[in-house]
Length: 39
Image 1 (cartoon, rainbow, N blue to C red):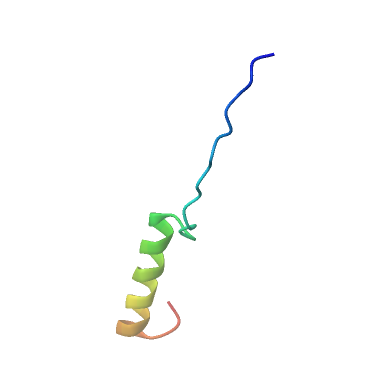
Image 2: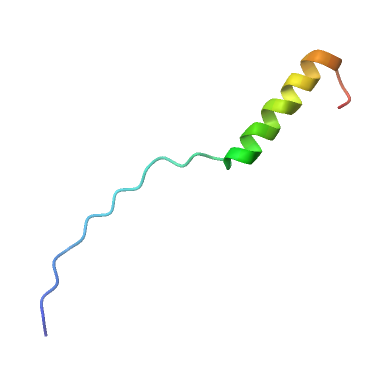
């Protein structure tokens, strides 16, 4: 059996939300500042 070299896996920090969700949250926050609740 052929010996395989060990692989090193490096994971970056998770972003949390996708870019679309981040943008949607920003838009809601801006709407709250401008118009107040409820949105």
